[in-house]
Image (cartoon, rainbow, N blue to C red; front, side, top):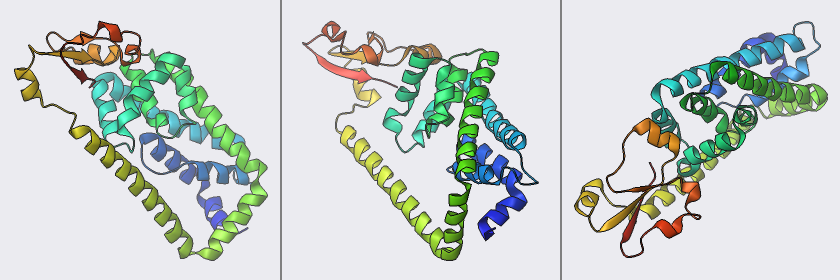
Length: 265
């Protein structure tokens, strides 16, 4: 067996648990390679389906349970924090809320297969006050399907994975340099897109102090979701509120004789 697989053979369960836990807590560490490698090693004397699935599921639910509790205690503030450090903060919260309204508890199952959403879904479940038993059931099912799918793929393509590991071993340090370079370029591009998006909005923004002086000659449209309104418990005097998804349907309610200020968070 080649060197990378031999290393995983010695520390497989520990690496699997650590990488799944780290990814689900939000660290930029993909757990998929560990799940695939574990699948390739299933059937050896040291590893089994039951052990691999149990550890992966335990790590996933432990991390998600932490986020669920934080979301339940801290409300929308935790989502805003996660999205502020996200590579795509402009659509982060709204996308998560959209999928929860559309799928309900099933969003926790689907989220496991969507990078980024898997970290945001548990605190959203807490924010929406999903019952703990429903959360555990949906999250457990999602974690089991997610881990099982990648472990099964690793088991089916174990020969090819060993070839890939052997090739990576021959490249040695160069493989790490190439992977780090590609990752750095991708992150740099995403942050450039984020910077350009924020810059494009700056000219169209108004400071709270300036808005306060113009409350009598503007109309304010509050586009926060119902969850945000309930969590914040505050409303700008005189503003019109409806969900941002209803903007196209209710646009006739917006006065046309004054400047319009949109407030969304």
